[in-house]
Image 1 (cartoon, rainbow, N blue to C red):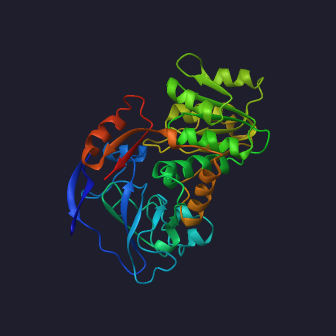
Image 2: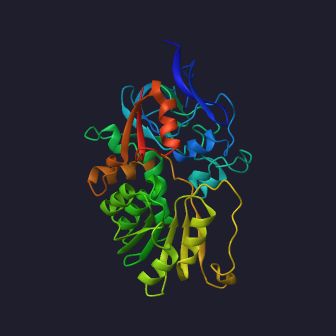
Image 3: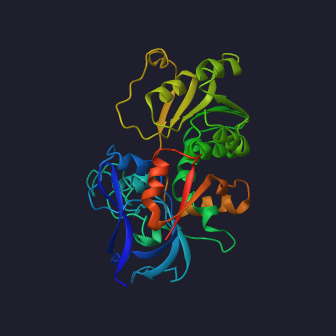
Length: 357
């Protein structure tokens, strides 16, 4: 067999299933046969033309699968082994990676400037909404899946679990902190779980979809705010007796949620931004305290690499967080165009879709 099925970006508004050659691999690469993958909100930005990628590119950056073939230089793995790779695939040699910013591996000299650094799957190389995917720099990126974990249990690790948890980590949440999380989509829900693991003792979440608010409670939220019923800024200020929150996490990527997150911070608090923004942001004077509030604004790109994946797999295996219920729908790869239609229009209570070739 030399051909495979793959979801390909054609033009804004069109991602279609096509036949493509199975990828060739180099000495440091691995060919993975995909067993489960999913659709991300970033893929929807690509579909809408809000984030540019080359026509003909296979989309997707959340692979779970089995090693089909190993490059000649890859050691420590075997064909037939179940593995995941992060959405971010650093090679570990760039200035950014050697400075500890593995997600930015690929930005700057000696590699030249590239938007989004180490995000290669479905961005600068073919991604994993396909029957097979080439994983570059396999020894830096492949993490073995424990035998007792299912595909769906680990499906969140490559991107949304890593991203959501990083929102809590970048916010430097401490034991006893009060945290507000704006938007409880998949990444926001993972940020809620991450905030709890980091030691936050009061977690306030903002959304309006009942199922998402219920899931947020199961993952650690103490208080839920429906923004269609109550003004979230006024409500959070009242809940904190006017003090504000220690950390606010923005997990949607809109001007309104960014402003709200900034507005509920206590003096010296941190806004941890996870949203992918499709327009210029403005920082409002009042919410920014005219620049005198000692606040931090920090952004985070999903951490990747095999060590990050190993740690997240350990969290799943421990049972401290169960993200499998975030998978609300199942589609075959043959029906991925219908899956995109459902996910992009957020119908039927969809959170994440498991896609199996």
